[in-house]
Image 1: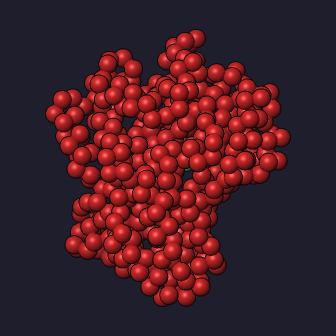
Image 2: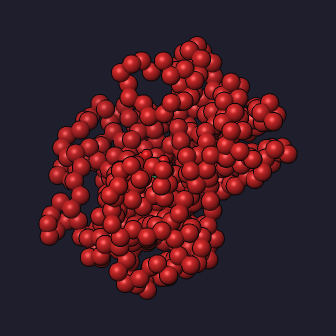
Length: 396
Ligand SMILES: Cc1ncc(COP(=O)(O)O)c(C=O)c1O
């Protein structure tokens, strides 16, 4: 089937886009996805910032197989002691600053965001939320409420009340944070807005203001976490520590998983008055937790975080073309901007024809994204840059 044919989905699978890429997947391995007709595609978006260790990493597969041999789901979250959950929480706590020592595992990024908002409200006893223009935090009612793309929101209003938006990376947004604020929420690096990197001084001022008024600083690292930016956690670039850290996507090593992480003291608010402040049947699924721990071990063993910046810099240096308006990049999280959304759509299609998968941003259609597996090789970087330049040339 030619990529782009919506008929390949059949009549019964719901889809929400009139023009999906429609590549028929047969297999995925390392940096590649293979279509049913045997063509190899270099996956430069890693399943949308999921495959930081690449597709089907053997160490992750081994951990999944071992856990499958022991047990799958046994009970909703929090009742039985399941070693993969305990091991993963211990590992994350060891890697994070001391105040982020309590992990709650859920099924997705959106669910982790929802739960983080609840935690902030429960802990502070307040309702007001401050979020950022350009933000994307998910597609449910709560997460949409703090996301900024109005086109995705107006049909489903009313959303959460008392949500205020400030400009990302703008000191004026500090004025919105006051004694009534439960949480200030931001992506540490904005993803869907087209890779927007804040200044350390802005994030530090936000953190200071949050501490002054006693509100929670929630940082969403669903896209930017686990080495994507060249640090294990993106907040490490900016000299801040959130009260609640939200992660997902690459956390699971290819399995569906999210987490919100805070201090034991703050997290305690979900365990009393009433008890079971957040409930999930499948959250912390033992197979996903085993895969997540294995993915972190791969990051460490293959030193992928340390190599990330050099790989990103190499790819950026190879992408030289007069049609490129701007490249925004931190580590291997990159946006390439052009003069129009139309040109970007063409380039994405032309890249696909040349066996390279890129993708546009929902809220920044004049740019396309690059977020490859962190273990992409130099040879693969050079080959993908060559194909991208050919696609750009053909689209201009
Ligand atoms: C920054 C950010 N937050 C939240 C989400 C939602 O995560 P999920 O799709 O796992 O629910 C995404 C997904 O793209 C994201 O990029």
